[in-house]
Length: 132
Image (cartoon, rainbow, N blue to C red; front, side, top):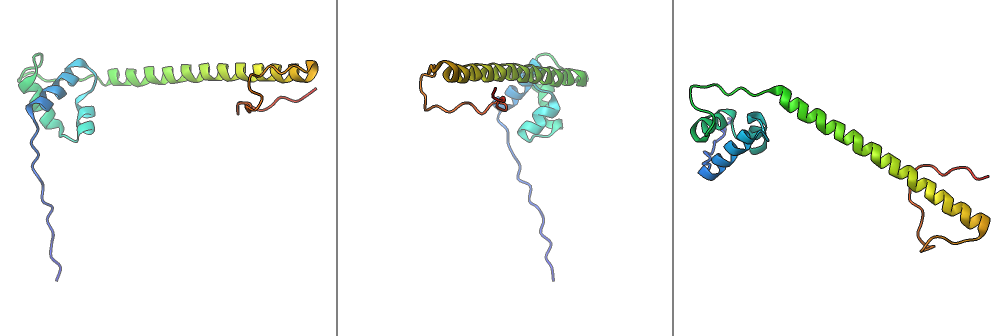
């Protein structure tokens, strides 16, 4: 004989401070309603209710329309920034490799120890170049 277990839903109570904070985040354009819902684990309906209740801009009777394009534009801008930073890192790594090769050649050809600390290993940058 199996007993059926029912899931007991605990009712959560949100402070007015949290509600107003979520409404401010929405009004600032930092997050969409869906993002706030996922971030805080709160239903979309509750967030819309709080927007209509606490918002200085949005009022009941008016539909809140969010632009999905704006969130897509944010993602595209962030992806562009990532690509730019990766390019900069690549350039810096090439510079490091070049300078390390110059130090290596100076120490071989001119017997000059340019490194401040000769125990320091070279960075693990790109492949080593072939020697002449």
